[in-house]
Image 1 (tube, rainbow, N blue to C red):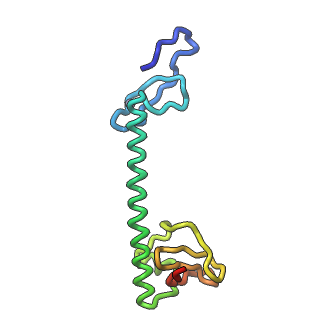
Image 2: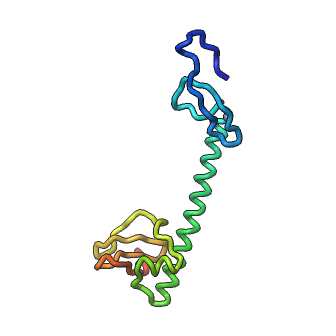
Length: 134
Ligand SMILES: [Zn+2]
């Protein structure tokens, strides 16, 4: 793994724990940024972290699609003016949203597929509209 260095000032003096969770062994290094014990575990850790990212994105997409279904249901039931707690009761997750856009009349707006969630003029809630096809 690491080559022997004859100079005492170069000895691996920092004690670290391997960040790859199936390993977790203690190792010694002189690199303060090192987080894994070997190259093999560096690549395994990388794959593990990517896996979590992929799972996170899959969950995000599920919640986003659920949000869109909730907006559709509210819109179809003529609940087009809602506040934050009503959205929460409807199981809407406001933290999952795309980049903010601007509605036709210049208000903050989030799009969920065919539906728009637009900040109301008094800033106390939201208006649900159907997105117009362009
Ligand atoms: Zn390791």
